[in-house]
Image 1 (tube, rainbow, N blue to C red):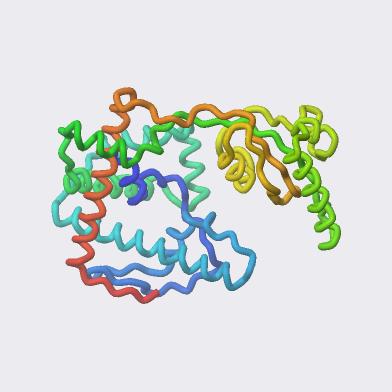
Image 2: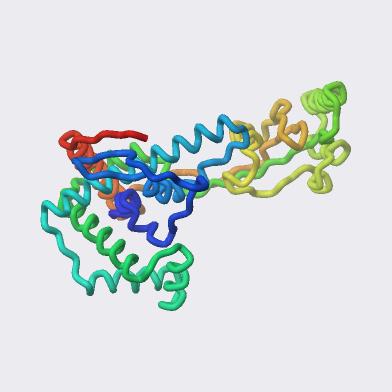
Length: 321
């Protein structure tokens, strides 16, 4: 139930490590939260958790992505600092047994031994004791959140049904569809004029199909895809497995309908939807327990955000990043 909330405070990221995004870091104060400081090296370590969000090759665009990642990391650290301050005020304690139990759970979930854990920590420059301190701190935050984000456990039928209707897309059965296509491939070195000629060929075949020619026969004759031997039939495909532009057009079609010309990185396509199945919502009664769990999770997340919002409103926060 608390999974999304706990992710926000890093409980599920204990083994991610302090990967940095820049070279040498000149430490300085980047934020002050109720007279407690956050320094640049802390942000640097926290930003490593979001390094996969930096994908741009263009220098300026990459710089913007780095700045967004650093700001996200700083925001997380500010939230953690506020939570730690509340933990201290509330006098929340964690026993050594709870810490050891959590570490045992981490080892079990990651299928590693104590020796393997120690090696992983050493690779990240962490001692076992420092790791235990991190675990202790995160357990304290978890206890604080469990206390501060209490949600009514007795949920009415109407609330659950309303949540089910608002989020009906979550409860649809897996959808698959069976497209057939004719591909007119565009060579990588093709000139604009050559691309135009290939499109004209595709248009001619489309006109033949509109005139009554069989789509499968046209695929056998003209398609440059391996599926041509199967009359263009790709078989049943699960939603999300093909190129988005191809899938979007295929799913827009009615069964038996043929598309216009669709261009992808591979070339020009003509698509026919042969069949589709699934995609209907599961009845409420069949997914009621899941709806209840997700409703509770959503309400807990909402309560967590409200709690953090209140802490931020009361806090004195100065950002110098």
